[in-house]
Image (cartoon, rainbow, N blue to C red; front, top):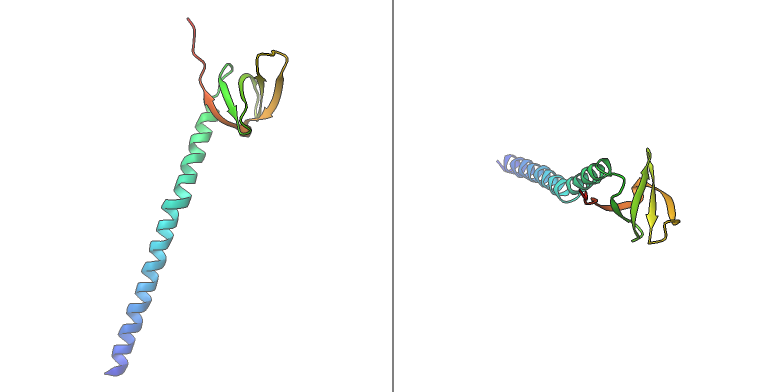
Length: 103
């Protein structure tokens, strides 16, 4: 009789451990992996909608205007001086503000 009780207790303990591991993995997915996937999707959509004339914020904190867009690089004009045009990676763009269309 005592052996059967110990076996039942061991089985319950194993089931509890498996359930806790599954709960921890699900929690890790919803707290870490899913938000990162959403951010990556948002960034890819932002890069796809990027157009010449948009105002951009770089990861270093500079604001500029997109002058030209190529495959993985773009040329950004900074400041009021029209001679300050710098080529940079698209990945260095943190945010985009769409240009207003003056009609």
